[in-house]
View (cartoon, helix red, strand yellow):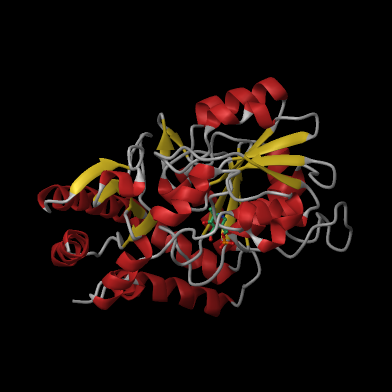
Length: 383
Ligand SMILES: Cc1ncc(COP(=O)(O)O)c(C=O)c1O
């Protein structure tokens, strides 16, 4: 049996008529740059994330870059973030000449360990950039409190977490900015690259809107140095259609997560939580995800397992695609060697990079497929 990591063809088949119609409308209008489709998408995402404003941009990466640029963050500034994330989080900070300052993760949620942030604040710290990894929000209460005490900007990297909630508050709506990605593998994925910045602040929304067109409000007059960060009208049209199904798909992902837990419980495997997991020490046990905040949208369902690389290869043989998000934490990446970190600096991030494996959790996953995933893991671990 084949179990892909994601089945976008099945998703497209379920909404084909609406998508095709929306794409046709863009072609008929020949309005490809900004315009009504982008404005409609922005209004819908602002509503969905409980923010007053949303500005469509070309990717999640450019959403982060534009938010940092809007705050004038650059050389001499420090931005606190996690080393256990997709490269773009810290890459955007470094591209502007600022310094990414890493804080280790909480082993239960894989998100920034909020209690360790204050010790990293210096007079040069300008911002905190928490990531809501795998679809679960970081501890925004404590993070906002540290930001308030030290007068820091908070930019939420909500690329993997659209619709996630922390104490009833939506991802992207708590910090000064929230940044979304519409990369196709996200819960709300476009037909290519796309992103969005959300905020409650009118002046900041306007600045982002200027920055995405080379810093100009009036054409050919440039107040800031920005870039070409525009969301394409075709992407906006696709995303607006898909947003109507997002809650249904999120629910299906949450149901899949519950189903995995039930199957694991019946599998005869030893189970612990990702917080308790101690590698080989607990024998052949599996570390299951911990849900600590209100609404985990399960962009990924990530387990910890012994002999992780062998397990991945075994599952591939059984027709099951899995992924490692992420195999090398950012502090150990070649391009960040200049930061002077070494192995051992962020032990929880390093351990997560060695132990974690993302299983298929996409909405269309069937009972039989999920059963095949868990029984194949059990077969591998029980020998
Ligand atoms: C946590 C995180 N931040 C930023 C990004 C960047 O988004 P994009 O690929 O749309 O540039 C991604 C997505 O790939 C991500 O997962």
